[in-house]
Image (cartoon, rainbow, N blue to C red; front, side, top):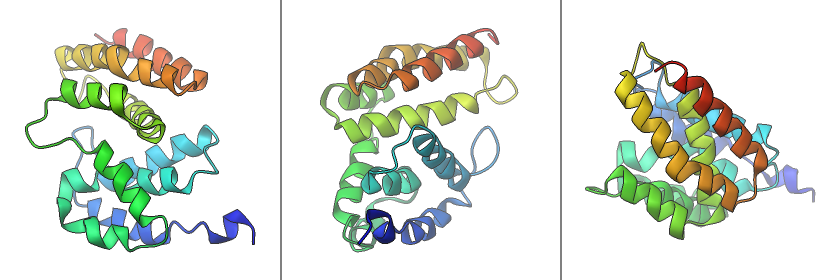
Length: 176
């Protein structure tokens, strides 16, 4: 059997659809953001990692809906246990500062978590504009990206992530 014959995203798409009602500061909703992250991973040819791709579709689910989804996700398919572990790794703990969270992923995170965080940040940087964020917030976010996310891209040896993140940082710095 071909690997792609058994690669089914539909259950994860259905789970992600619960994020349709969760708005984003830049407009749109969390559901579309999940698909943007999936698209970035596909753009960078992460075709062969079903856990990563499935995780991208629900990476914000626990932060937005809580841990009551864990058992259902675990039982979605054979990848479910690994997907939920990735999503948990990507979930910021209650009371955990953004800097501690990003440091945790950078220093102790799996390669999958780092790759997913890079794709997530690319999506977020694409949505970063002065009509939705103050110049101070944009500068702070860009500084965070340079401090934590660029090193993640380097640690997973993805020069394309590094180039795109650097390009987005330069372009967004021109705004502020």
